[in-house]
Image (cartoon, rainbow, N blue to C red; front, side, top):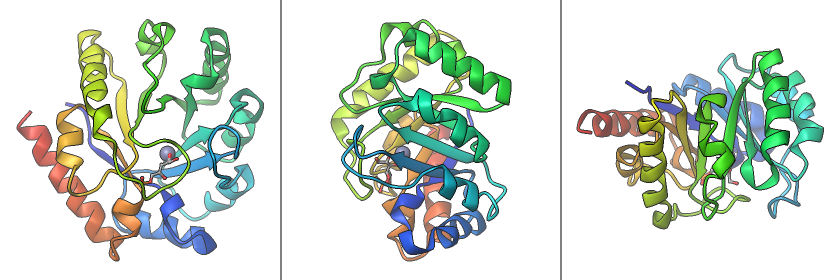
Length: 228
Ligand code: DX5
Ligand code: ZN
């Protein structure tokens, strides 16, 4: 059975105290830390870079799940590997089969897991459909990239369900990560549609008690898994 993982996005934490946001997630029982790197070009916000990821590496031993929202991921991937990312996700909108293969061999050599991310309106490209065994995580965005605190777009749920059946049909082990607006009220539906790695920014940090929010997300997700 696929494992449920809760991945708090520190973009929704106190940006003046990112280390504390990581600690809150770690001590609150998170499975991994989601780090949103945005270049102001691929999406309309500028967040933080590899130096910040590297500095945060001293704060927690949890896996770092770095989501690169960059127009030129090939150029910057080595820096984020060196900074200590355990999973690096790249957007399909800025990759083709050959840049994907190049990144894949780089990550493989370095022992870093690979994620392929798609925006809400982007279908999974044909080359990726044929290579489901070549990446570890399929990151399905349920908001337009840029900012935390947006509402999950329910129009993405049928796509999520289709991707989940594609993954199952292919007998692939790929995890499906759902990113954007996931919170207590919709996490069961997200899991029923096929998500198993659940990113939550505002759904964790805007709730006042991060540990309680993580626990509640996990409980709801696990019960939705059971009835599937
Ligand atoms: C958006 C980011 C998301 C977002 C999650 O560009 O990729 O990870 O910060 O935050 P919430 O859960 O608040 O939508
Ligand atoms: Zn993200």
